[in-house]
Length: 359
Image (cartoon, rainbow, N blue to C red; front, side, top):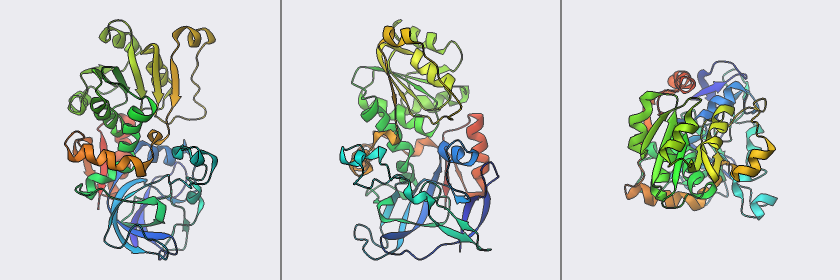
């Protein structure tokens, strides 16, 4: 039996309880968690914005140590550090076949399985495949990637979602070029990763936008050259900071219609707007046909940073070990499992960067 944060039903409070994990069967591994990040996607799962089978153990951003491996697992062994990959590619669907592994049709197929049971026998699903809000978890082998050497596992937990997403949004989706201006909407965990990645890409001006004045110091530490409090006049402020043109690139990390529209309006004519944030299906964003033609902007969705974790983790590790990317500065709160509900409240209120559950 291990302690875990269980979502009993959509919209219900999380329950911190004991669960019983099965032994890892063929092609599966058991991992003792070192840490798990509290991501906005976990909040989206709990409130039903993103649908998953419930009851479920949430948590999808984590790292830990392999304690047991089932038959056929050869790439990791007991004692190895691993980063959990919540969206493993199958390698055989159409998107995997054309190299778009982040759009794998079968990436979340494991979320519908039975992951564990509570003490009374209630069956639990694994959230987004990996069920990282627990002392230990059992995952498919392709959900466990070897952790980069030299990076503490507590820090490496952030690589599983926020960092891969933020780095990929800059380098794979928006493809920021040296000298370009970048505006980032939403300075949470992913937004902080975007700011650092834009600095690594050589952006000349990096503007952070958030509703919270308290995040300015954190944003500047991550690489922001300017800070704007989000309002109806944000696009005008961005144009004033970019010679009247608007930013070359806008990256939206909130998922709300007003923020998406604000990011679009803050982008220069011919610029690129990338949407990372996850909004609801009942939240439309409107554009008129003439402005699409006139502005010549591109608007792009971005899933998991358009990343291939097997390819990108070694690159990120190089940046981290060289001091170009700081994982620890992204963490503004270290908590236990029972601190997750308060971390959700902080996200809703727009407070802090990444909360990290440390086991």
